Length: 353
Image 1: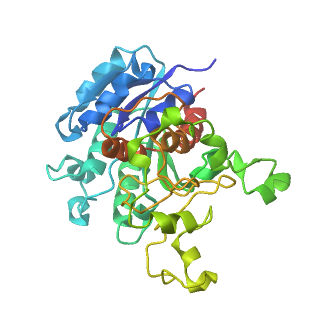
Image 2 (image 1 turned 180 degrees about the horizontal axis):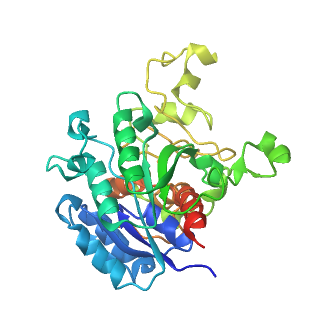
Image 3 (image 1 turned 90 degrees about the horizontal axis):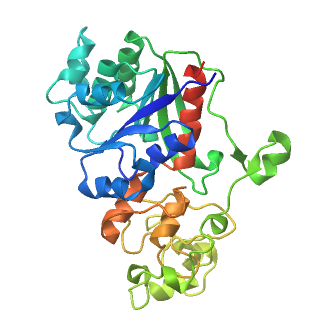
């Protein structure tokens, strides 16, 4: 018999990982975030009608608040999910010493520590922690090492998963790090991939990567027009129009054979005038793009909100609260839901039994 598993979500943001949990058959009993617009976004969506949505700074929310929610929600097992903001990381000095609990109770502790505090206080059946891949960089690795030390001391087996959203049906190149912990036993070595490069499909039996034109189809009509999408009259509008789909400013350089080059290759950030091609996946959707930072639509405009939401694999019709800058930040910071679904399903298999 399958167990009823519920989730407690920390650093929920606009709900990318929460949506993933619902997709994986693990309803979210509680979501929390410090950003008021994110909280309003969650409350606007029927998906959370039975969830307790908490507005607050996790530093100031006692673990017992979440334990009380777990205790009053029917379940057999429960997990904690969340992607702690990656800056600032804890300083290594906070973790020094034999008493590792001191690190996660230190008043100076960062949000990574707060995530660990909730996990060690609640002792869920499993957890999914998401962060940037650079957390494994030598300058940051002490955080991962101490994170592992603490969860191991509390009885968790774990997997560190370096994942690319492309491999899970998301039409976007986006690399992320997941640390997945369980009190059970992992059934497989890694989360199940569903997609691969087209030339490897016959060998692997997987589906080809999803082209971005497929996921944003239907949003190009006038009824979806947004004033913020306009580039006409801007400094680089004419240049953007000359960039072929799938290219960036380098298409207008001598490196590309462009007559009368307008730019010098490798002198600009690579996403400058970066334009999508409908036939291949998107580049990473960012939270705070500059005015001429892509990806742009191949129709020489900025992407619309439902388009960037679809590229992050939010369900169609998902609502977002706030002005355009706030919504871009919410979506850009989110975990692509299909990617998160694969991680939560991997965890669910280890504890569902």
